[in-house]
Image 1 (cartoon, rainbow, N blue to C red):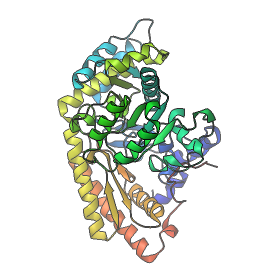
Image 2 (image 1 turned 180 degrees about the vertical axis):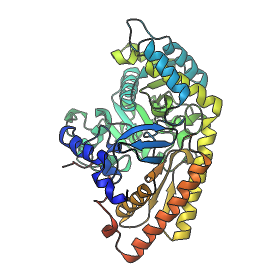
Image 3 (image 1 turned 90 degrees about the vertical axis):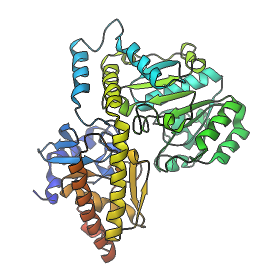
Image 4 (image 1 turned 60 degrees about the vertical axis):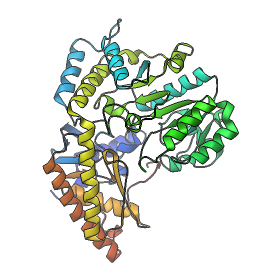
Length: 443
């Protein structure tokens, strides 16, 4: 079966139906086929194991994308995590009484984060960030938030675009319209660029006594900027604002726990999801007692905050992650891939920029028609049996032979991209439209 046949694959046919009955086709923007390879991306999986994925037509791929959008540091279908989940399911996931794993998980998280005193749970990343922001506001009695980076879909975050601009363009994606977000939230969120302490100081000077929290990811695409986290910590302390580190993406990538532990800067509260539980729905906030006790002043409660599968999965994940020293392995794999991208670009003449810490690696083509070039790259890689994109989040199940095969395919795909770029016929080589790079309504 050739790459042309993907247009008629079971996954694409099902995705066409999904767009008629599911707004946007998929429940996560990052899983829309249009974000990868419109009209060809297989869209659905039948099963996954380790670093391998099988689509609905039984085709096998090696997954060198974000691998479950960053959730699976231990790889797909880890047997120890699955056993813990199966045991939890057999004992029943929901009960009038509480699961004892709640306490065990809290003890483990506090052991990993000696600066923290208390833990509170949720089940998804966006939800736990909304909860954390509520806690910060309740603890300080203030309303406004200064932030940099990506922090989910909830009203508090998207409200920054209510002023009529596209302020989230530099933090997440361009074109996010805040329809449905109450206009009354205008002016309650204030963005600044990662690494720009002067910009943060200006926000604090203008809104200081109204800032409940300074919210940021400790590290992301640009890598750590020396002095930035330390400066933000000093500013937050002086201003009486809660310093909130969003570790939903960076957490458990470099080490077992938060990236801030590597950098030696402690927040007041930190949030986790994704890799916390290796693909099962679980999220947590760890924090100082002075902030966390505000949970009891406001109202934050949900039945599924108390189900058993999430904490059971998280306990098994963290235990194995620490035993394997998974952060070290992820960094080693990511470092090799980043070096491989650079070498392949040098050999083929493709203009490339490599970004991110090794465990959250990314690259981009330096060309005015970069989206079309990336679409061609993804198309070439799919034809070679790889799910690929502009980012790669390694797992411990990306074995040496997998990485070698991937980098060989990358060099071949870069060669095709370079040839198309030189001949000026990139778009004529695409078997479908150019991939989306931001939020767009789907027809």
